Length: 92
Image 1 (spheres, rainbow, N blue to C red):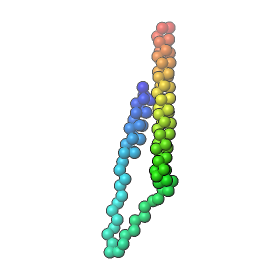
Image 2 (image 1 turned 90 degrees about the vertical axis):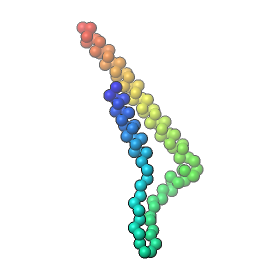
Image 3 (image 1 turned 180 degrees about the horizontal axis):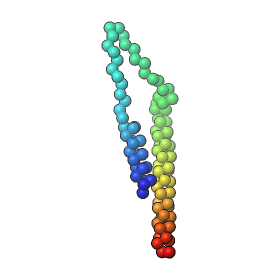
Image 4 (image 1 turned 180 degrees about the vertical axis):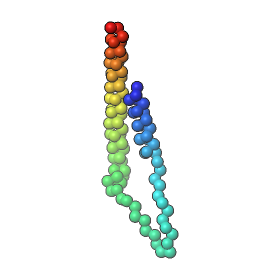
């Protein structure tokens, strides 16, 4: 059950890190024209434009779901083995 608690906490922290809004400082007010350099990520723009970004997100979510499912099943198996070992020690 400790693994499940740790996994839940990790998922909450991961969700909170994605939930943050993009924050930018205000540009300095100059007399002339202010030029703000914004980073350009061509690959991400292309994936969004083509609609393939959703495929990437679905694949990542599927992988994360598989890992979470595997960890939960592993936790259940270990808990079952611990219980069997405890019962055998008590019955001796």
